[in-house]
Image (cartoon, rainbow, N blue to C red; front, side):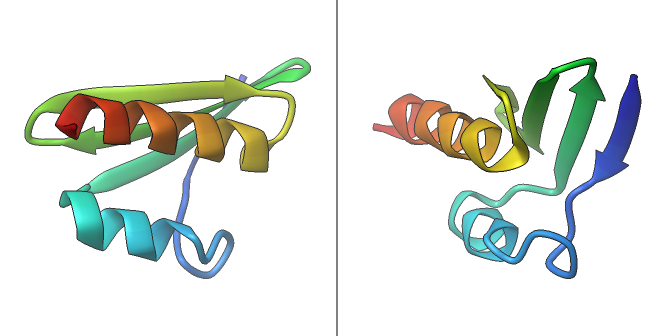
Length: 69
């Protein structure tokens, strides 16, 4: 399992989401073929799973938007 922090240098789409939802940490976790993106803010952790980082990021963003709707 490998864990890394998503920054604007390695994944530029994360800055827009960080500003919009006041996220202080975005992690990328890879375990075998599964990848996970996790957002942390004052309300909790929001996770998305996928085969690659882009798919996991999209699902985590969708979960975050549903929570605030």
